[in-house]
Length: 451
Ligand SMILES: C[S@@+](CC[C@H](N)C(=O)[O-])C[C@H]1O[C@@H](n2cnc3c(N)ncnc32)[C@H](O)[C@@H]1O
Image 1 (cartoon, helix red, strand yellow):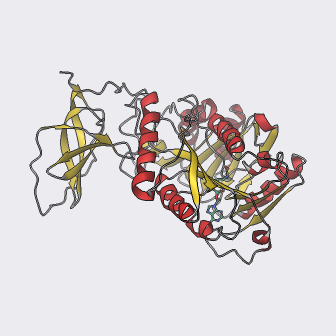
Image 2 (cartoon, protein in one colour; image 1 turned 135 degrees about the vertical axis):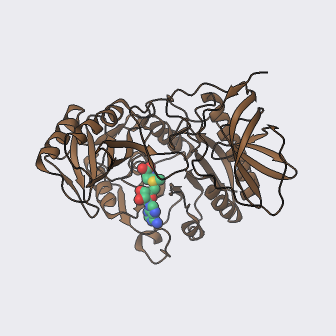
Image 3 (cartoon, protein in one colour; image 1 turned 90 degrees about the vertical axis):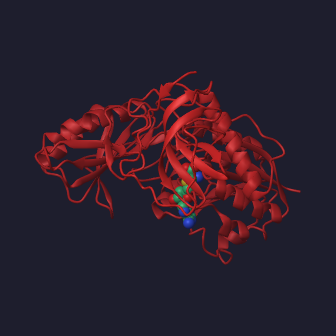
């Protein structure tokens, strides 16, 4: 027997509710699966028990946290028999910080598990199966995040600064001194920001810090209720400059550079494209996975000079511009006006004159839009977590040969994929992407081809 204490903190306040049918769980239970948010799954008397900190094929002791009608929740208190894939978490905050939930599972097994969970969801919710599952897209598993959002708080008790992420299962912040997920400059700013804030008596006007790094420069953007005093602003500026960043203040309605604008951009090496962005724009956080994802998307779409491509949810042109270099015409649609402007500038800076960008809300009926009436033979979709059902229902008229779906939510992919299948498509290629190692978030690519 291999007994270990769990590293997972139990939720601070017990949320236990009374259930109509009380179940007597055994003291030690077998874990039979992993949930999509990284909790062990056990079954007893027909009821599902989600256990934080437990892994499949383990036997664990646990304490119940909450009872519900269909399932119960618990935290693992002792690992009686350990999984061969269990590893010691690398980060000292693991189990308390809300950022990661899979550090106790070895990295290779994280990817295998994610692939199994997504394909199961497609089968169960979408009632479809990809004809071919390709190699997952992976990268280094630490220091991969080139952008992050940190919470900032000043304790009333002693005026000290809390800079960090939300605690597991709570809206309160946990002070983090180092985060091994962050790229090095971001981690250094996270580490040094509290001391800079504490030099000022009061910094309650600062609520968040966002850091995003381009290939050469970055931006430290502080979300503020009002502009900080000059002395604090100066010290924050020095911190930003020390780590090759420019300082910005985000007032909610607008973002302002403290001194000069940062030259924020990243290159996509395979296509010799350079994409510029501004603080507040959406960028893919994992640079290496992003490059591999674009390269795979372009190859799966089998682009050629006659293609007319529609890139929906295009952001600042992350897929649109690499696609433009290989096709006749590409139209990018995005809901945020500033990002549409940036995409147009990016096209012009990359000397690509075969792309057009338009602002539109892709949950609306867009069939009267002039851009919609152009013919497209290939479509790329990269929606937010809510998915793309509304626009997919409007695509039937174009009858594109291929739809490439980039998904950050397997449940939305299952639902939207089922709609595409009802329109006469099948999933010919599928892969998962390890965009967020050590977390349970999973991204995937699914190619739908007209049958
Ligand atoms: C997952 S991001 C992808 C962006 C881009 N494809 C990339 O790779 O960087 C989703 C994008 O969809 C945009 N978006 C979200 N909801 C939208 C909507 N209802 N209509 C249009 N665009 C939307 C967001 O602003 C964001 O840029």
